[in-house]
Image 1 (cartoon, helix red, strand yellow):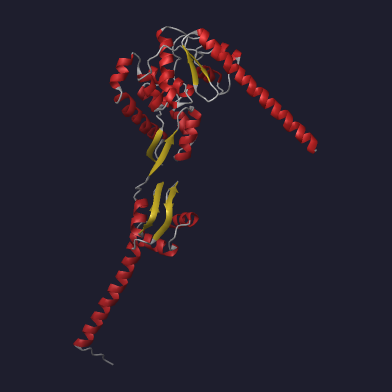
Image 2: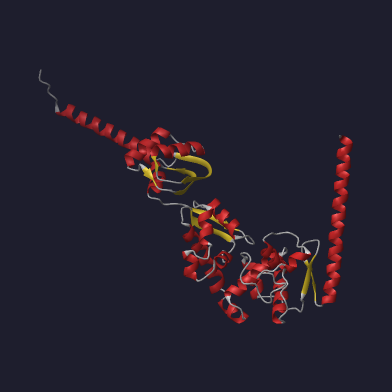
Length: 358
């Protein structure tokens, strides 16, 4: 049987085809480009530690509690040609289309991680901090802060000197950055914020950058009250100018390798960093000072104090003469002894109460 179609029938079929095509194409485009295809109520960070396929990606999204259609995501990835995704940190805040979300990860367009550096720490702790905020492990960061690391050798610094230039701040660094690149990024900020910004002050100080950072590192550990930093820096500079022993407790703490209340025998510990025995600045920095400590060395308070002793509130009592200092020290020791007496009394009362309850 032969079928005959009139021109009207052919036109109707053509219109139907167009309508179906538009409907299918529109539905497909809407699903791919719908700006609300993937949603989250809070800023969500997605970490891809390795090359990831569509199924692995969907598993990660499920674990993060992101709202989306799993089958539709996998379909969209195949249609768009995005089947594998690069390692990195990718953040979603609000909503996104499949196209924008998948193409960003497929191309490796990462979001930077916020990396916070604290002041007054040591190399091991910094390595742990960096490894907790970036992909590399702490051993890799410790290697960068060794004397033989490529970066330390390139900058003509010891590992301790390189570490001391890790200026405390919050930095934006790619999560997958190599340890060397991450440390270089932070060092470059030190170079810009300190060496370049205070170039004139450094030249006029009579000390080089290494010596300034070393003294600032001592100020960093000594000052519990930030406002005292210029006064403490001025005191140390007074002692250096008069060729007196620096007698900085933080250098002894660094020498014995333990942050605690010092004992009499600690001050007699033979070590290059013990400034009670060795004249001048120690061989290098003892920690990474913040910019306030460095500024304190460059802009020290002008006074004639030569001695200081701690006070119960964490600040210092400053003295011009040794007799004044001896009196202040005696008062400090009496306060410490009273605290020990109160502590011992409290412990005995607690033990007695425990005994009665038994």
